[in-house]
Length: 359
Image (cartoon, rainbow, N blue to C red; front, side, top):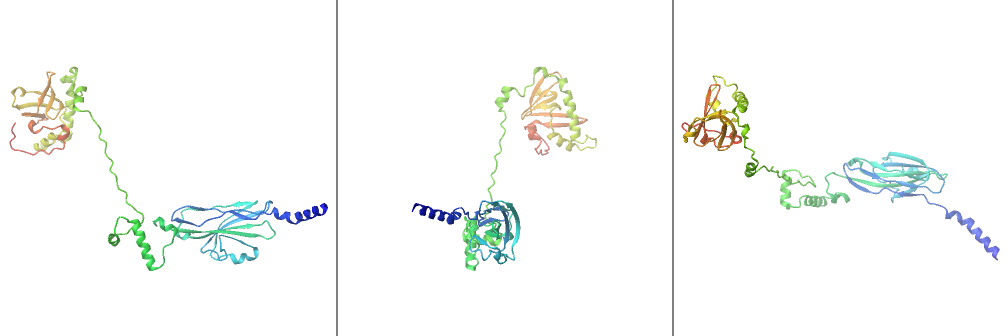
């Protein structure tokens, strides 16, 4: 009995053992349907594993079809050599081919900057030469390409074909793109200009200018920024400054020619920089100021600081004083009461001619 049972077991294993080691050929990675916008880049994977452990020749091809193949009712299909003539599509275009020796093969299809005409079915075909008869395995995916400005909700669905459905579709798109406007306002807007979907103008934010913080008047006084040291209060030191000022005035007045009009020279002198000019107080309500002559070292809003030939620093107020300037025979008079401003402000000031001016 024992020998008979052992014999039956051996017979069972002999007939059934080969079935235990058969590995089915299959796709390990298949392409999937995808919807993208114009200009995007996509990748479609395709990987296949052959049956058996022996190394065989495998070939993988990517094809582009305008429409899905009729015999591929599902995502995957297998065809034998006798049926190859039936599955060939007239509109099919071969894109690429890869061939390897082994049991595994993979090939990714990469499309850069897709266009609307790239829309369609992309099919991965694998030819398996592991048996005497070559088998062909297929997997395919549908690529939809939307307009670049299509709203996000439209990616998963196509635009409706019916007239009523089309109106509802357009109305929904406009409401999503212009949520802050009423229906009447949207219609009025569309009659005047075109609408770019999914476009929202960004509000321009004005950048605040950072003001450079300077010294206060108190800090200037404490630092003594405008004080001239006693050893620097020498008339001879500032004579080169006066020569530079004369050349500056000649260039400003185009040479101070004898035929030049006096009122033109006067208007230029009123706006010119007076640092380095030699001035004389000709009239004043305070007699002690009359006759003071010197080089202007500093000009403030209300006073002139001048250095005299006696090397004395004098502070002369502008108010109630008349000053005279002489250069190359031209004499100009400045009424200090109408001159109460800083040098930087005076360059943009428009002075009006008056017949008589009081001190």
